[in-house]
Image 1 (cartoon, rainbow, N blue to C red):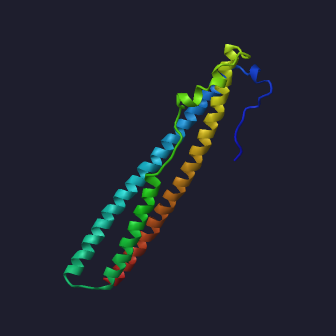
Image 2: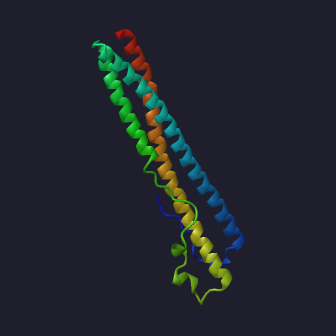
Image 3: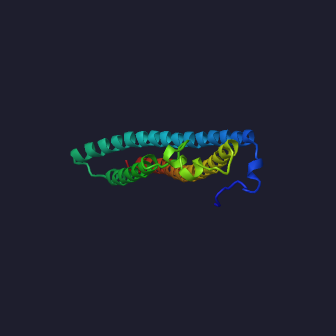
Length: 179
């Protein structure tokens, strides 16, 4: 994806109000990408909780059968299912924990550059407009980055959900016929 740049020819003729409107809209969209990321994380947490609960129940059942000395086919199926659930929980933790998103705003050390702050060739309004244009371009970069990360995390979450949807009925059918 190519980097977004505002055309620089006649940039001084851009209205400050128009540039501020674009900047405010871009900040709203950055908020949207951050909320989407939070939503993906909370759904992943919910799935982890469901899977851990299911995992505990299967481990408890399997352990009780092993203690009773009953080694049937269901125990081997349960071991496979336990392994699969553990792998899904690990995969979901990849979605949850190392998530890097670019947030709104920038640190002053990124904005307060000497060559940008002190520009004797520009009027105050032109300097302000230059900052706004720079932030619009920076906001587009943040939006693009966050959308890419969210799409990747969303696809991993979908894959996990489809795996669970397919795996549960298969497990229940196999378990029903082996008991």
